[in-house]
Amino acid sequence: MPAIQVVTSAIELAVNQALDWSLNKEQALKPLAGKNCIIFIQEVEQALIFNFSASSIYVKADVDAQYATNPEDETPSILSDDECWISLSIFAIDKLKQNSQMTKLIKSGQLDFAGDLSILQALSKLFDKLELDLEEILSKYLGDVAAHNVNQIGQKLVSDLAHHADLLKHTFADAALDEKKVAVRSILVANYCDQVTELKSGFDRAEARLNLLANKLSELNKATANQSLNNKSHK
Amino acid sequence: MSQGNSAVESESKQNDDTIDFGYKQVKKEEKVELVADVFNSVAQKYDIMNDLMSFGIHRIWKRFTIDASGARKGQKILDLAGGTGDLASKFSQIVGERGQVVLADINHSMLNVGKEKLNNKGIIGNINYVQANAEALPFPDNHFDLITIAFGLRNVTDKSKALASMFRVLKPGGRLLVLEFSKPTTESLSKLYDFYSFYVLPQMGQVVANDSESYKYLAESIRMHPDQDTLEQMMVDVGFEQTTYHNMTGGIVALHRGFKF
Image (cartoon, rainbow over all chains, first blue to last red; front, side, top):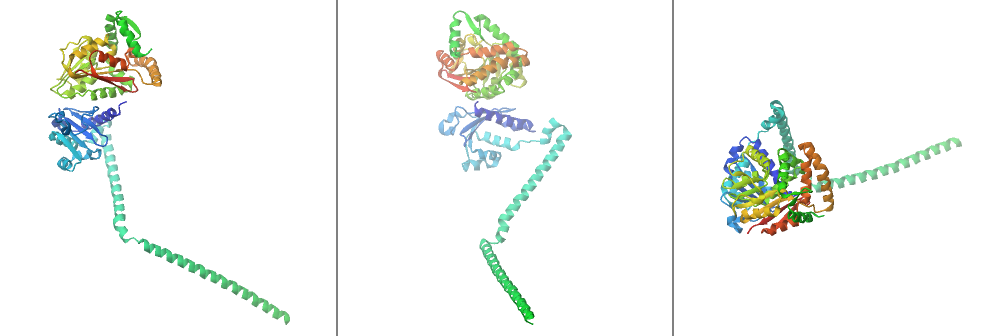
């Protein structure tokens, strides 16, 4: 089974579902209707063709590799007036949302571009301005009250998770930046260990000496006791 | 007997005024009506049966066909034997307002189902519906940029005549895409596929569409259809150039592509 068609099918389903859920679908798609945006993903060397209409997005794979290189370098005529070509890293896709950063991205080489710039700007706005109301979406399937409760619980869960993540982040940051400075240095720890070892051996020596003295005292007591017994018997 | 040999045999039998209809031999003029009966019977349940029979994979096969079509804005596209309009709906979006898509089918019931489906989806304006026989297309010479025929060629009585007719109406530089069931590339898959299509499919057809005979015909017509190499040669014989084919799902389906220069 052609793998890339499975991927394009999944992408198409996801973006159109997100559009259907969005409160401003028509408004977001209007500037792109009838236009094509070809996105070349550098890591996999595969171009995906996004074909926009007033109501949906159709995603095609470029199986003939027509858009594998910058069209302006190869054959300028390959792009028509209502098309644009973008080459970018898969890790830079989320940056497409930052409309104000487009020129910076192009200049820094993170994004290669050919064709109609207004399509790229409209695409950026589409990603950025998509309004998804989770409660509204859930209410279609669960009803208003249940959707509201699920949404509240979800928001609390997300908020708690974010709080704990933030706390953990601060703990690690404190440990790394502040506590490290006042922490005992390794040479002091080594000295302390040496001193403890020395003390332990001194204690062992003293204990052995005490044992020796105790034995001698015991022998002396026995000898004294024997002496007194002998004296009594002679009397 | 290989499918290729079956096709050659069926071609020779055409000289005797008979033609295959599944495993049966019927008179040439009868086949059109028999095929029409099959599709009149299945038209209403066609889409749901396609999804069930192929486990939804037919959508991926069709998507690959569109990706391989090189369709662009402003082009004129003929979706032959277009049935319920799966390809035509996508092409309509791709060619845009300046382009034109013609959804043609010999069967009036299938065409009606397709027209209703596309109208309900709001796909109007750049799409026309024509009831046409693939062997004698009612269009001028050098008219279309692209012609597709998906799961339709095996039902055509005279395949070579149909391919020649498509060649005539295609513009120089245009391409033909034939998406059709073909011959599995491995013996083990072939056995599994035989079991599925001869035992499971008719049962499925009986349960869902209350029609096992039409789905028995489907399995038989697939076996009688030319294999990959034979069909490619048939395309070359009528004038297509740079012909290639691409097997999908182990050769169960193949996409043939040819250009007119």
